[in-house]
Length: 368
Image (cartoon, rainbow, N blue to C red; front, side, top):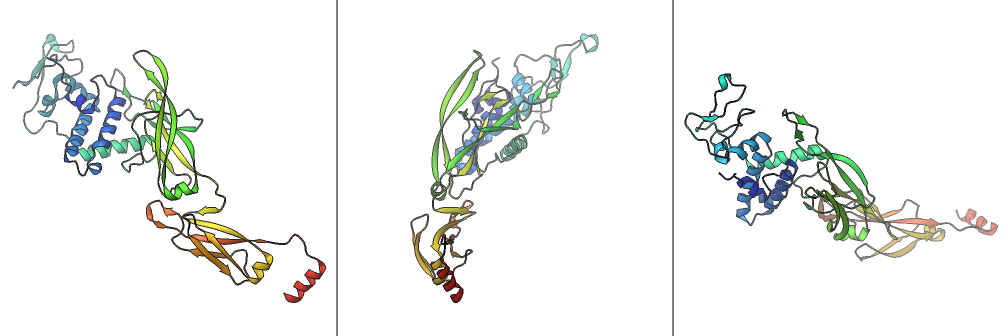
């Protein structure tokens, strides 16, 4: 009988796929078909259910072994992994009332047969809720990555390229379930690095939001030929309004192929210096120069905000070095509430004269 491959087909992988390939395929499919992202597509919920159930079985080495040998119906009707060392029926469906006889082994007295019993009642395997499967999957990822890689959709991309661009890297995640040796013991999972790359962004881009295209390179390894190659890829990096310096934009599985998986790439926002403005949290500060005479007797200026508004600013004097005039709602958008903005702040820098004559000093002494 031909081996059943339905669950593998639902994830779009071969029946010889590794555990890492199963996780990657499920992650990609679950994010694609999750109901929260497909509210106008009812069929996506069913597809999400199918890929989650396929992952629940195939990610468990024992359940996968049983599925590969006997098929899905056997599991659902109460099947369990055969005793270690026992042979299978070559892909048949062993639904016999007295249990399934397995060939004898040296551990059986007299070289007899073992019976593999199952129940056709309610004691069979039951799938978990698809949302619970997905949540548990994300928790296992977060535990391995030490960073937010959840369904907040900060992760962009499921496959592709890794830059060899000199960015810093740190080990922060591993393959989630590890490997098993011949005795069924869990082996330590190879760790996969996360590469961090600074991304310089102008204050205007952080104010308005934009998408930056980044060309990156990745190393791939062909297991069939044993050859390495380098691929180019263009990543579209979304810059949300109001992001602050140090914010991370995360791409998962876009890097060099290494043992245990594929590297992740995190772009770290760096704010470019601006000739007029300084960012202070969600506020924007503009500092104007005034001379000592203006500081003492008064001044007027017209300044422009980051979005082009003209503001009349003045002080009758005297004006101290800590002077500030605030204009609410004209600063940077708030990243978590982009419809709200911080303040626009006008400050002063007092320019003192490089020197004074004795007569000027005497006049100032009399006046002050």
